[in-house]
Image (cartoon, rainbow, N blue to C red; front, side, top):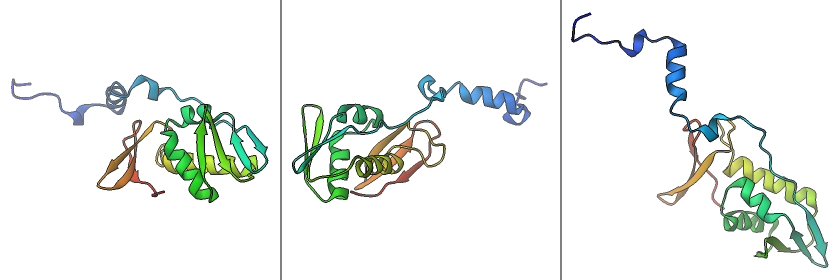
Length: 145
């Protein structure tokens, strides 16, 4: 091999390229674990529904609580507010309905459509929200609330 010739990417085996590529993936993304949204703990008092484990849900979803609150308000057609790590909504709603809405939120705004990873971020660009995956790099514009 002359001094001008160097090994090219074409001469690498699949395993060598895979190993090289995996070096650049952050360690917290490499570990495949079971990820799930906790079931909301609901109590209904009169005409108000309270989600007791609001902070736990927000922590797992890794999204701004105002974003999820606005989503639930819109989908339930009511008003809501956060008070001492709890979310309170005007109206009587069953746990099943709120759980279903939170899971729909996770599917639209958290989970990657390509690889299924929850390691995504929301970026606002030119007035649109974009969900970008930190694991595979995929991105898409998400529905506006």
